[in-house]
Image (cartoon, rainbow, N blue to C red; front, side):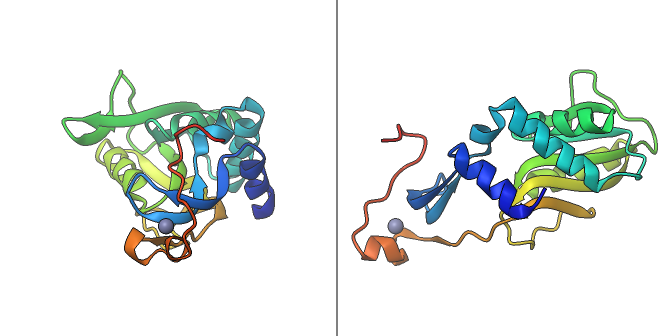
Length: 190
Ligand SMILES: [Zn+2]
């Protein structure tokens, strides 16, 4: 799947908006990304899953692990395309780990999958948790990389599309300076 097709699927489902937005962090941006809005469509999730799985063809992947919540749907679809099982990590006392009876074998070849990588923090924590449990993490992937390719997750990394989305503190936001009203996404769309 080509990068422009990935972006088009996000635009079509309003998972990627252009305008003037207040992000959860309080920073302002010209783009708003909400992967859940594209992944609510099983056909889109399935297509992204197949495209990510192709990146790992021939690598004898035995399981997919995804950080909850964001990674669960896409992790499942990658696992389905690879014909392997899908587990997810979540926090227990602040530490990312496998719960619910999920386990990995010693040396098991695992890929870590997330919807979007911003700083790479949750993917990196999942990679480290799996290694501590004995897994062989052969790679990591996300649908979108919004770090502009800079995130280091401690494993070879793939993304279907890379976005470099500039953010600004409100005081130095160019759109604020022009008097453009900022929208807080998640509130009702007009
Ligand atoms: Zn602004």
